[in-house]
Image (cartoon, rainbow, N blue to C red; front, side, top):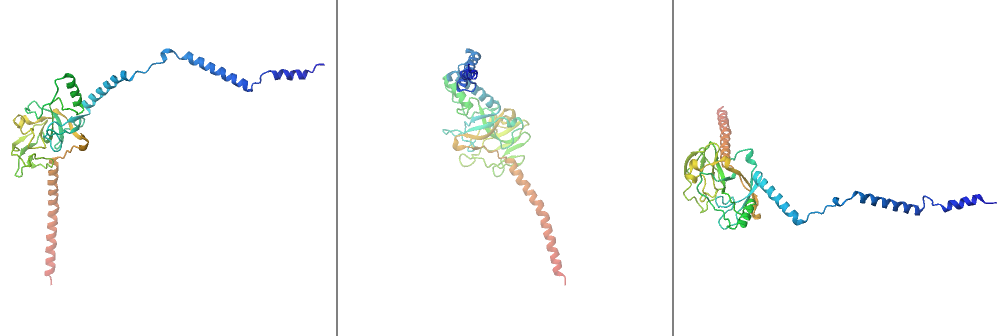
Length: 310
């Protein structure tokens, strides 16, 4: 007789069981082979791009930087080198020294007009006939191109004849000099000008000019270094030839960005408002003082009468 049950047990022992380690390893190997085949089928030689070298990307980066610089300098802000000493000591530009580099705001006057006290950079009007400096440019084409690029960042003298001055009076106002104390007057009021610098320690006698009404759309500008500034007083002979059209204004000087030892804002003290406010305070003082004096007299009179009664 044959032991049937025993034969069946031997047959099952010879077959692989699904949960054994050998079965698991075999399935994993088959899966990896399948994934590798799929990956190789999806990838192609065209999908693998070789990255550009640094030297190929460098000209592109330089070109983008120059374009962005031109856009920013043309419409938003510009670094300007102070080329003359006419704004000493607010802005350094003395002969032989390292001139200040100032950040000029080109946006502010898109929404408003320059006001008294603003330090502005503007294109030299056609009526002005005295340049305060000459840009030093090399005869070498490459060097001159580098100087022009440097001028855009305030690292070299500007190649255009731009000027920086302080606004003293605007269109419709009458300006003249001087009163008994040697002060400039606007609409008959003396100005408060703490920023004035006298190069030789005192006025040189060239400050006086006749009363002049500034035309609408123009500005009367003067340098803080009053003894050494070719401004609206003298340009074109002064008067109408000396004013600056508002359309010529490039922007408002905001900050001194170089050298680091000079980091600070550029003041825009309004010489007219200060004196107007002082006058207003004086007027308010009179209004308050008058009733106070009247009340004091009434009280003293009442006390005297009270003292005379038996």
